[in-house]
Length: 282
Figure 1 (tube, rainbow, N blue to C red):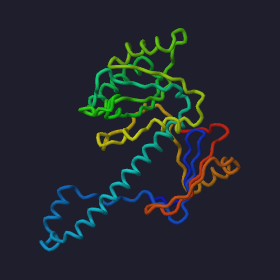
Figure 2 (cartoon, rainbow, N blue to C red; figure 1 turned 45 degrees about the vertical axis):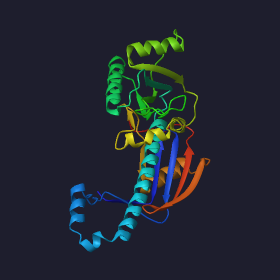
Figure 3 (cartoon, helix red, strand yellow; figure 1 turned 30 degrees about the horizontal axis):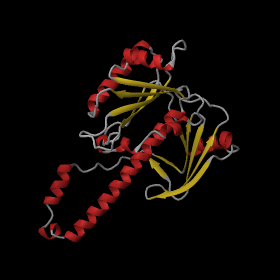
Figure 4 (cartoon, one colour; figure 1 turned 30 degrees about the vertical axis):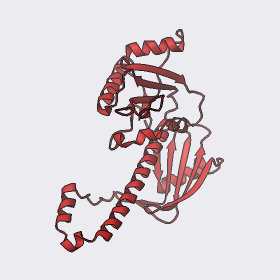
């Protein structure tokens, strides 16, 4: 179904983001033109005349334009990933433990590391069906403590926000050893209580370093989450306007900026915090 709108709200728990599209209407629901496959691109180049193929000036210009476009896509992908993690985190304030899982031996194979990670998550969920988490995948730095470059690059590790219950009778280090022996048998565990942090999404995004977006992560999932989490709620058009007038209009403004892009035109972005949670979809 085709949808046209110029006003959008995203509610992530108490955090509200407002997008006011000032110069372009946003259109959803239409079918995008299929991208050309590598074989089709090769065939198109092969069908060009020799004169076209020898036009090096035009070739260089097209290559530069393509490289610029790819950089913009990469930048957009990073921003989209950060926004997705931030919103999902803010929609789930019950996640009040910050857990870091590392490998005892250097593990640079992302596919193998993710297999071990998912096995560990299955062990926890089997024992604790109400376990919820958001996990961010990262590589450690490519140089060691002395500044020497690591042969196979930095090892994979995971940062999790979760609702795991610690055992009060044990101190933190004893609990970490217990968790390591029971669920994460591949390395080390660190846990931190973060239930006093405001805007948890912004807090987690501080841990998203550049290593998260290196070439080894290309076309790979950069974060995982359990299926039973609250999802951010998106409203567009008249529904968004009604929500804004009823719940947001009188709130103090937290943040405001105006940006412009080729795809969405000029946009006014504002952010607010609700005084209390509103019902959200599970």
